[in-house]
Every structure is written in structure tokens, then in C-alpha cells.
Amino acid sequence: MRLLCRADTCAPLTSSHAELLDLGFFLALLHSTCRRRHCVIQTVTLPCVSLQEEKRAAKEMTKRLEAEQNHVKEEASVSNPPIVQALVPEATAEPISSLLILSRSSLQRPLDLRSYLESSGHSVETCPHVRVSAMCCKGYLVKMGGRIKTWKKRWFVFDRQKRRLAYYADKEEQKLKGVIYFQAIEEVYYDHLRSAFKSPHPKLTFCLKTFERLFCMVAPTPEAMRIWMDVMVTAAEENSRY
Image 1 (cartoon, helix red, strand yellow):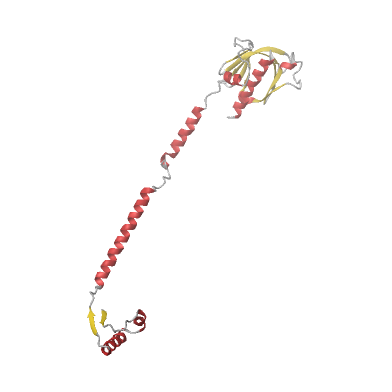
Image 2: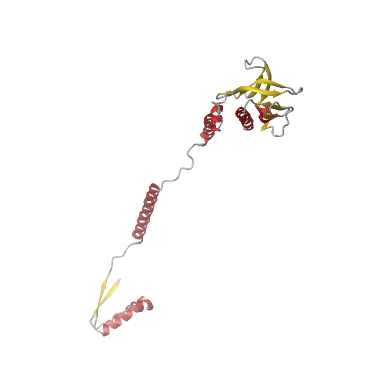
């Protein structure tokens, strides 16, 4: 309810008065003041809002706020999609890893022995004493005997497929005299200490050491010696990778 005072001489009441005075006291004071000053009091009744309507309005406002919040969340999820944590299901993780291992092993192609020697600076084409292919190296070497320290000419065959260094009586490869397997090779080195007994050519002598024996051999030329030593070193390095 709002009270209006129609009088030019009626003194206006401030909000501070309304806060300090009780409502009844305020009305009595207003009536007495207006009577003394011949004022007419007009009462204007404002429409009252029921408690049920206030609750319904509050519920509608709450629903509207929730709808707006949900709409904002949907827009944020569309603009920033969630990061996919697992690209591959757990059930297929192990088979795929095994496939990767197989693919890597398939990419490891066998070493081309001739290409390797040529890329290392060896003149394979101009060395007639050594025959080199992708998997084999063949040629004559003079070998010192094991028990009897005599020097005999043998035909050596280095075979990467069979993983062995075999030597024969001649290049016909009919009579096998001995075999040195890759896994038995420890080291290959130039005989700078002259450990070979009465070598026919000390400057062209090199040694191949195994777990059981030391093989001393003499190459026909310096280039042939370098090729043979490099070939045997590849066997030792290849065996260390397994």
C-alpha cells in the first residue's frame, strides 16, 4: 500500500524517516500532520502477488538458468572436443606390437658383402686373387698348420649363408680340410708382433683367433690381405649381434 499526500504545503518524508519509524507510528504521524495542514489523504492499493505465484516464478527462473548453463556446456564441448586417449583398443595392442617387430625384422636385409667392401674403399674389381659376391668370398691363402708348423696353400671359402669359413685342398672344393664357424671367431688382426712361426711373407701375414686355436694366414697381395681381414671382421661383428 502506498500513501499519497496532495497538499502543496505538506512536507515530504524522506526514506530515513520511514526506516526509523514504525509503520503504525508513521501512519498516525502522517494523519495528524495532514489534518493540521488541511491535507487530503488518498490511499492507492497496489496489486499483491500471492506466495504461490512467487514460487512458480522462482521455479521458472531456475529452469531457465539451468537451460542456459546446459546450452553453454554443449557449445563448449563442440568447440573443444575431448582428446582421444587410446587410438588402439587394448585387445589389439599386443598383435600390433608383434606386427611392428616383424616389419622391422623384415626391413633388416642381409648384408651385401661385395657392396660393403666397395663402400669401405676396397678395390674388389681390380683384385684378381679374391672372388667376392653378395654372400661369399673365395681365394687362396697360405695357412700355417696347427700341430706341425708347416705352411700350405689352401682354398678358403667365406660363406655368410652357412655362417662359416671353410678351407679346402684346392678350388674344386672337393676335399674339405677344416671349418671355422662365425660364433668361434674372437678377433682378427695383423701379425705385427711376428708371432707366426717362420712366415713366408711376414708383411702379408694376419691372424684369426678363435676360442681353441690361433690361425695364421698369408695373403698373396696387400690388397687381398686387407679384403680378407675386413671380411673376417664382419663375421665376428655379425656374430656379436646374435
